[in-house]
Length: 71
Image (cartoon, rainbow, N blue to C red; front, side, top):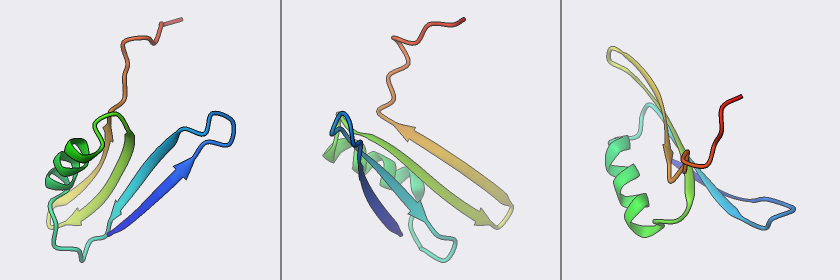
């Protein structure tokens, strides 16, 4: 598992990216819940792959879509 902290150069806001490799023995949903409890106001992209049956996913944590306007 790899965790990266990214700082936006203009706003100095911090975001995180978590990459779970196929051979890691962790559940992505458990990691997402733990992250949300520890950093409730932060944005995080969690990516993972599992090839038991093909399962590829991206979880976006803390993304506020209420202010986005269409068109």
